[in-house]
Image (tube, rainbow, N blue to C red; front, side):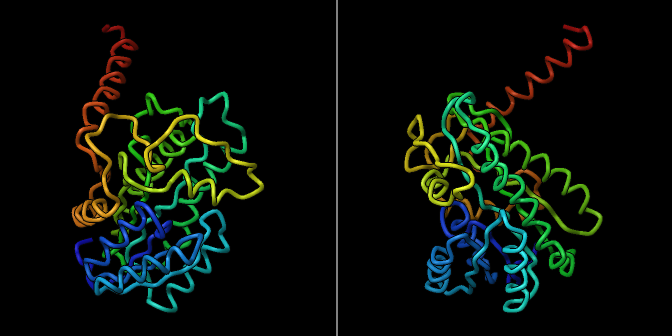
Length: 281
């Protein structure tokens, strides 16, 4: 998808953090950006920012755990700004920072309901509109660097498992939609300044129980990363990276080159295990 200007983009979880950064980046490309968020006031604040910078946006309320809410957001988008050409399924949560033995079933259910099923439901809701714009159509699902390598030193097991699943889902989705001319990318950011922990606690439904305080500190509630990185990236710096990857139809959208060595170590370990299985080691 190389023609962005004049088209409509939808960004879930767009009211803060990485979602806000993506929304601003897309607006800078002259796209009309539908900022969808559980808290519509947060979405409205980002749309106001977009307007201040000379762009165009629309704020809508969307709960990615609810098919009804997403259907309403898709309907409102279509009615007010036309069918989306780009979908960024970005909403996510970090429900537990503690060893796995301290993860409750409610922690797991909350995490998967947003980080995996929320992505699936979002894609399902907006795919009909994207098909109308193919081949100028694209999907970006937000996973994490923690969806490529386990978070050594960060006790966030449910989060990592959900992000691995998001990466796998995105890779399969890309293969299945390629014939329709719809590109799919999966964003795997390292540490980015955000309020992920705070918003996860605020947004957690009562049915998933109370969220415990983190057992380790993450600066500014930022997105966790399993590999050393030189600095925390500003959320606004993620947007241009995503734009470049969409235009090039890249599968994995990466933000922190310093993490390459850690990813390579993981795949080298897998290669060694294949060698062992074949009896060559």
